[in-house]
Length: 269
Length: 281
Ligand SMILES: Nc1ncnc2c1ncn2[C@@H]1O[C@H](COP(=O)(O)OP(=O)(O)OP(=O)(O)O)[C@@H](O)[C@H]1O
Ligand SMILES: [Mg+2]
Image 1 (cartoon, chains in turn purple, blue):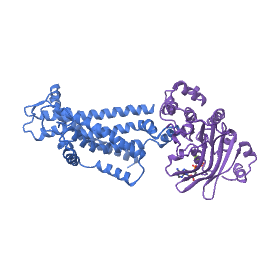
Image 2 (image 1 turned 120 degrees about the vertical axis):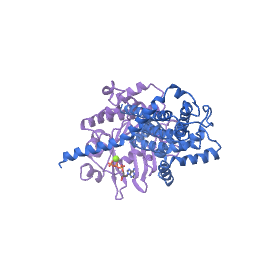
Image 3 (image 1 turned 180 degrees about the vertical axis):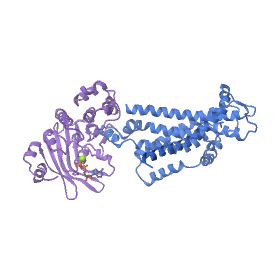
Image 4 (image 1 turned 30 degrees about the vertical axis):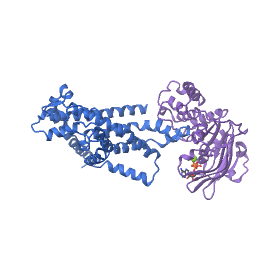
């Protein structure tokens, strides 16, 4: 887990605005190409939204940023993902270390069937965290705006929390390993509108410290929460590709590409 | 007939069926307790047999069975659970792993005397372990491993894939996810499998018949290479091979065997419900 790791050895100065970047990325499931030739830059300490019709490869794109696609045996990746001046797909790079740097929050809230405390402490424990666990747990919960809700029941089951609270717990759990980037795959789609707004508010606050990439089906959400937006579509052979990317305001008010305009005005998809 | 009548009739039939199932068990247990309880006292549990086993206690058989159980557990738990982890978490679906699974399913159905003969051939003769606790434990372990492996594999597979994914996303290695999330979740099922397997091993005569069981030994076993007396085999001996055996002693021995198996069962239930409560948390 050490040594060959991406970031632990030397700490090169990363180029200014870009936290992670896909270069000529192709992703295949078996012989099916799910993503083709994607060049996508994610800006540091900003929220980047990935939007596009169902099946166009948004989740695949997201998972290729922390090599989670490798858990699918048939999946194969070509091209580069540059993180801290290094291609995370280089043979010397340990995917476990990549995921420690680039955290993830899933669509369905999925706390471990353990106490609230243990959920947060889990990542730190397995990564050999030497600091003060109680403090880490409190800080992470505060950052996820959950501390006031749960401070008196840290030892109770995480499964007893509401869906929105569980999702914030999952965010706190991801934060607790101190990642640089947090990937979120439709993090609010299983939640009610109020819980959704809370999550969005939380993301905006956390964006001062972390870089977010968020997949969403909800156009208003992308417009509300993100600084940058990337729009994906599918080819005739169902391979996903990046249509355009830019500041969210520009992309929504003044799209450069006809297909983007059609999509955001609801003319298809 | 209206549907309420039909329902009532159904209840009666189901009730009768469950009575039919439990009645023989209760009768067997009751008759053993009634006829055997009076034989059991401290002396019966703590002394050697005497007067051609017609008097005295059954200490060496009890001790021997515990040795055999311990030896079997030591061998079959790591191998059985390890195999289950491999099959559930690491093995790809190839003809090889499919063959292993098929073998496990079929091994569980092989008559125990066949295991006994196999153990005689492999452990006693070929590996020259002699008739010994070691050879008998190995034989019992081989019989028990398929039970443990298949129940444990099932328990491990029942843990949602999601937890492994989340563990990986938090920078956990595959093994950390298995060790700290999956196995604790699967533990009640694994323990059940282990105890079920050991229960079977505790009561079997055939596998130890040629591999480690002794008709009569005047002393307790000292090493793993000694043969030993064992409860099920002793019971067989005193009910069929010794003329004029007092019935009380036979039933007393059966009762002890029954109590041993029953207490294992109780332990399994307690452990399981303990973990289940902890899992809800
Ligand atoms: N594990 C997998 N095995 C095979 N094909 C897959 C796998 N996961 C995704 N795909 C395929 O890859 C393509 C892109 O899937 P992906 O889940 O990335 O799309 P998406 O944009 O996230 O869709 P949605 O909006 O419905 O979540 C789809 O055609 C899908 O069928
Ligand atoms: Mg998706």
